[in-house]
Amino acid sequence: MTYKIAFLTYDWNNEVIFHFINGTKRFLELHKDVTVDFVDGFGSYEEYDVDNSGAFQIFNLPYIEEYDAVIIHGNRVWKKEQRQLISQRVVSQNKPCISINYDLPGCTMVGSDNYDALYKITNYLIEDKKCPSFAFVKGLATSKEAIERMNGFLDCCKEHNISDVKVYDGGWEEEYGHRAALKMIKENEFKRAIVCANDDIAFGVLRELQKIDKKVPEDIYLTGFDNLKVSFYSEPRITSVDRNYEGMAFMALDCAYNRCIGHKINKKIYCPSVIVHGTSTDNMNREMEVKDLKEQGLWTDRYLRYYYHVYDYLTHHLSGCETLYEMMDELERMCDNFNLNDIYLVFNGMFFENFEELGKVRHYGDNMYLMAMGRRDKNCDNRHVYEVYSRRFLLPDKYVKENTLTRIYPLRIEDNAIGYILMRGYGHYNQYNLLVAALRQIENTIENIRQKLTARRLNDELSNLYVTDQLSGLYNRFGLEKYGRACYENLLDRVGYCHICFIDIDDMKTINDFYGHESGDDAIVTVANMIERITSKSDDFAMRYGGDEFVIISENNIKDRLMTLWKEVSKKSRDYVLDVSIGEMVVYKEDKYNLQRAIDCADDLMYSVKKKKKMK
Image (cartoon, rainbow, N blue to C red; front, side):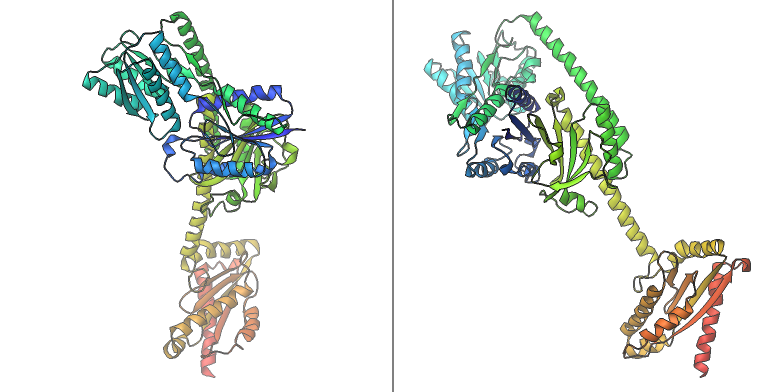
């Protein structure tokens, strides 16, 4: 039996996701009976407190019924209430649900012991570095993790009878480190150690201290939390706490797996954190640190080169795409060039079916459209659709593989759920957020194509309004110049002759004066409808020539068909008498009549018919 696990994350930090993926890879290598669908919403702290219901729709895509267990990793952007709705669905089906770093009712929590980690790093500074005084820069005030870290710090100081302690307000971003340091400088109050709630805050403090020549660690010890790249690349390297995200993902999967096979597990499991010593507190081997930095710099350069290669390719080949078919074809060529053979682009049916008249498509519809894939299967239709299938499945059965990591990333434009990208395998570009940038370019290209098609359709509609008479629906004088002349000349060249028919409504002034202009309009519409019934839109040209006058250009005889139809139309009961006079002229190529002369001749014939009527 193969166990399917959904791993849902909406995390702003690409480094964390990179470690999660590595932990998942390690787990799958040891468990051949497990398949993981890794759904990443590409979160951003910039979206905090914004109505982001469209952004979170990706988590409503996987059918919980199709999975044996679900792992949920969230943050303050993906609000607890939203995560809890998913966990409740999982728990209600008696399936294991694991929550990473945050408590959710009915779930096993796997995460870091924030309190213990800050206690240990503070204890190290007190016992090993003999620090007598401390400053602490807090994380976000509403964050449970931030509160736990602060409490671990304060309790450690209290237990060691350290009273020279000052706490500064903060947030998770670097600017809060700047603010705290500037306050220290303004008050000229510096403690021997500054403990920060995360690495970004610590880096902000470090930059301000360096501006006033305060040396770290000689004058002040400095620590962070999370062991992210900013702490690694800082000079001096910032001592931090490694939360072991790779181990955390492995542990979460292991908990889910053990629950699937019937084993009992604890309700709360902590992944051991480790203090990573840097030169911001210790005299480290500088040569080894430089060696590590050089190696990291080398690989960063390689990955960025790879990304820019992909970016240039995307920019060059996608910018000229006019249709979705062209775009999907180019994307598949890109997959060939960059060895992304196991990649699939899927459109939300609601989006695809309303592509040119898109309103708000915040939800995924019942059907999915497989639009592109790295396999370059040529069995797509003329819209580049390979298969339409139920939303219940992320991919059609024939493309599903067992014991794999499938990564699912949303495609969206603002709140509109376009669809998603599925990828199998692993890649170092995740840790540099290069994948996010590439997918954003794909989203922009899709939107550009949609806007081009919409603009083209609107221009066509405006053009039709420009050349069409609004009352009758037939062409007007502008239409005569744009389409009528071409029809006339084409007929003369192709068949050697052309029928010009001129129709005029009899006694139009009497209808308007005695029965009102509404009756006059009714007369015009009645005749126009009659003309439409006996003309072909593709081969004939019909227009409202003037107030109550109409012209038809055709290869075929028009007058006789009009008179036959008129016998039917004239039987309808009206308040007024409706009759028409018709003149038809056959023009031959050798006559060398221009269009206006041909129309004038047909007009003269019509006038003769009208004159005979009046003489009766």
